[in-house]
Structure formats: structure tokens, C-alpha cells
Image 1: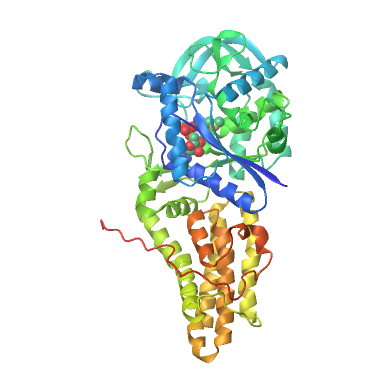
Image 2 (image 1 turned 90 degrees about the vertical axis):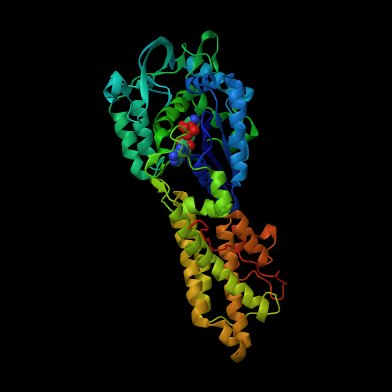
Length: 513
Ligand code: ME8
């Protein structure tokens, strides 16, 4: 069986889960669900990033122990995944024993291979990003502060530290990018990584002595691991590392797709493959950097009080409406500004008037005029064949778009099929055939029902509940909803009783407007 290992970033537990976190998790969920339907054995991982200075500081501010903070906030992230109907197979916390063990074994491996050495770090550090910055990258801010390109404030740090020999990996990384042109997606992000590596790499500080909230470095009481080395290792831990003979490790590693926000591409596309290659492990196949959601043009943040709460969206607009909107509104990889007006437009035009209306028109005519059962089809005309062929041909196009996580283009393809079906129903006018040619009316409604079966299967990854309802209304059994069951263009069996049709997507009427 083909396998697919997909991951979200692990979320910092100093924040409330907001639209940005929901976005990435839903995107990975859509990908995982698509691959499962397409016959892959999928491993889908999410989790929380719980160590480091940022978390220690947040706990101190809240007046609680870091472990207590992480227990509470990690659960909030777990809960929001559930509320979003995200189907992750595992949820990892970096404070778990399995993970601490994995980090320490990886460390020993790097040390054994002479990839680490003890030195002293003297330079700039941004706690918000948990990142080291070179002097040349910084700008002067107010009150003599130094500001990183991300906008984070930097502080001067001097401490004994272990270093990873990153400077020795530049050429090997460049060769790796050249040999794997699809490693960094979307392709538009590739150059920024390559030019950063070409500009020359310094060895990377990978342990800290000024803080203690982290994975202890083996045999070095005063050092804890740099939080990014710890965090990135989560992708290995979850499939069984350090047991490289474990069934799950052999099956799933290397990861097929790490989906990350564009702000953390450098860590995933540079440090991560360097650590792995240095430890003699295979790097992941692809890193996809998605874009950023802002709210009214501002970065969302707890302190600005402008975070978009996923629970609020689900309550106001519905779960599947929310999932659909975030993936339809903007190409995955681009930035977007959240707007309620755009959300309402999408719900009404694409969902209520688009798929909702097509399903309603078809299913209510079947209920009224075909005795509430799958109609009988006669010989197909060119128009019938044209629609069925488009439905059949859509799968391979979707598979191509999913290779590069072009969710909006995948949805475009499904909506092109819906538009074709809308034209077909208008042209064939089954309501008029009722009196003149009942047999032809049944054929037309059969073709539409089959098209809806295809659309239902294609929509399952995006809107699992609503697509499930649609397939229920066509009496498609739960074990016949995967893409293998689309090889037959006419799988619906004439005479199968259908349940009474129910609306899928109501129009959204803004009561406050
Ligand atoms: O960076 N728009 O965690 P994090 C879109 N722990 N996506 C957003 C977003 C926004 N406004 N805000 C957050 C970390 N995200 C590290 C990762 S991985 C080994 C360690 C999404 O909680 C985006 O995918 O700050 C981002 O990369 C992710 O949440 C994690 O952000």
C-alpha cells in the first residue's frame, strides 16, 4: 500500500488557538483525508511545542509552573482540532517521555558523528521567534532595541553553548535542493531559501544554559537543547524514533509533507534537513510554506485582542462552511486578510447556490417523480456522456492539484463540474420531460445523481459532514465512498430507495445587517 506521512507544525502553548492555527490544521486534514480516499496508508500528526524560553516566560507571567501551563494550553489545541473535525492519527507533546528520549538519542548521534562541539554563544536572540539573528539582519527599533526581520525584539545573549556545524552543510544543502526541485513548495519560496544558504551559513547554537525549561542535554547538567532542535525532532518521535527498526518508522519515515507557516520555513528547509543528513537519516520529501492570515490588515495576536476565534466562526457560519472558506478564499501559500463579508459571499454563492442548489433540484425531483428511488437510465446521449466523462476525468486533475496543495484549484475543478451539471439540468429540463418522455427524464436524473455521487466523494476531504450527508441521500454505503469506487461511472443501482432530501447548505442571512 502507498503511504503518506503529513504533519502540521507543533503549536506553541503560549497562545490561544486562533484562525491561523485552525487554517494549517484544516489544510493538513483535507490533504490527509484526500490521500486516505485515494488509497494511501496515511499517518497524520499534529501536536504542541512546549519547551523553550518563550513558554518559560509565559508561565512565569501567568505565575504557574511551565508544566502546568503546557498541560492546560496543549489541551486547548487538542480540543480545537476536535471541534474542526481534524482527523489526526496522533497528537504529540514535546514534554512527553517518548519525545525526550528521541531528542537525546538524536543528540548523541550528532555528537558521535562529530557534528557538535562546545563553545560560547555571544549574539542576538529573539525569544518570540526562538531564533538567533546575525547583526546584519537587524534593524534599530525604539529605545535602542534591535528588531528582527519578523518584527520581534532581540536581546543580547552570552552563554556557553554547543554548536552544530551548520557551516559545513551549505554546499550539501544546495546540492540537495538541486536534486529535489520539489522539496520546497510552493516553488516561489525556493529562491529565498537558496539565497539564504548561499549567503553563507554560520554554525548554529543548539544548547542553552541561561534557561532550564527544555530537554536536558545528555551528560551536561547545565545545558538544555535549543527548542528548535527539540521541536523539529517531534516528526521523528511520532513514528517511533529512535527505534529505526519499528514498524511505524520503516513504514512512514521520511515524512512526505511538512506543512508550515511561511515564517518558519527557514527552520524546516535548512536546519531540519541538515540535522537529519548529519545524523545519517533521510530528510523529508516536501516542505510546504503556507501564507499568513491577518485581521483587518493587522497580525493577529492575543495582545492586540484581534484574534479570530475558530469556535466563533463554527458557531456563526457552521463547521464545514468555515473549513471550505479558508481553503477556497485564497491560494494556499498566499497571505489573506480575514473578512466576514467574504465569508458570507462564499457561503451563499458557492455553497447554498452552488452545490446546495444542484443537490436540492436533483434530489427533490427524484423524490417527487421517481418514487424516491435511484432512477432507471436508458441509452446515454452525447450530453449525458459529456457530463459523466467530466465527472470521471476530474479525479486525475484533483490528484495533480493535491500534489502541490493547490486546494483552491481543486475546488475550482469541483465547481466547474457543478457548473456543467447546472447547465445540463437547465438544458435537459427534466421537469418538462415528466409529461413528454418519462423514460428520458429518468435518464437525465440518473446522470445527475451519478454526478452528485462523484461530487460528494470529491468534497469529502473538504466538507466531510456535508459531503457525507449528500452521499447518505444517494444511499452510497460508507465503504463505497473512496476514490476506487469512482472507476465505475454508473455505480448507483436503479431502484435503491433514497431518504427524503434535506437541504445541505442554507443561505446565510446576517441578522445584524
Ligand atoms: O512556530 N496565519 O508555533 P506557532 C496563518 N512551535 N497561519 C498561522 C498564523 C496566522 N496568522 N498564526 C499561526 C511555531 N499560524 C513553532 C513550530 S514546528 C516543529 C514548531 C500557523 O504556534 C502557521 O502554520 O507560533 C504556523 O507555522 C503555525 O501556526 C505554528 O505557529
